[in-house]
Length: 238
Image (cartoon, rainbow, N blue to C red; front, side, top):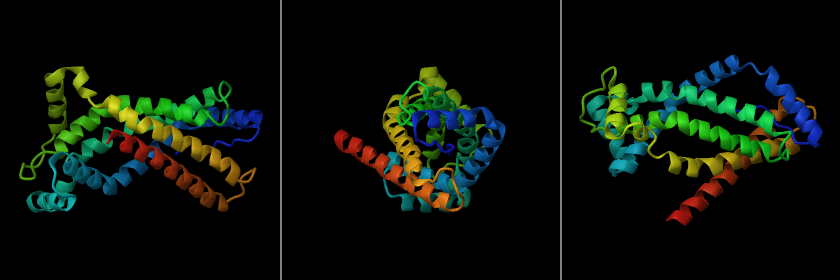
């Protein structure tokens, strides 16, 4: 998601980063990012839907899937998906801008290897603030009984109003603290490992197609490190 963050000597890292942020076309980046996120939701949203129902309602995801398809057809798997996809797109754009902008401003003030972690932490805070009301509404829509009639236009806004009536604006952000406690360490570690790994794997300057493989290796290493943090946190909380 983020542009290459090359960690060499500190002055070289700062120079490359300063060249990147001012020339970044935010409009194009956001448009491409939104298009990719919307396309991925075709696959990811049904999985999110089944995961939520399994966690909240019990039973297996397969059973929930069969019930949704039986009563609502394939569109039952996407109940709440339109709102859940479109309403989260601004949060994705905000995350990217917060990450790249924070990384650019923090690099001269922090050790170059730590700047991605700090920037990712700030971006994650922006994401939680912008996305938590949407997630709370979507979860309520996902947990409706399988026999419930299809959602009508405006159902998500009705749920948003119902949340407000239950507890005011604070109700919209229920779960924010725990969500941030779970995602912030993983995001910070993922981006720190990813950005710094690329500096050792990629040649300087980058040479072409082999860079994609090396960036994939860096991403895989970051994912392993971040998942270890997540499993450690879950083990301590259980």
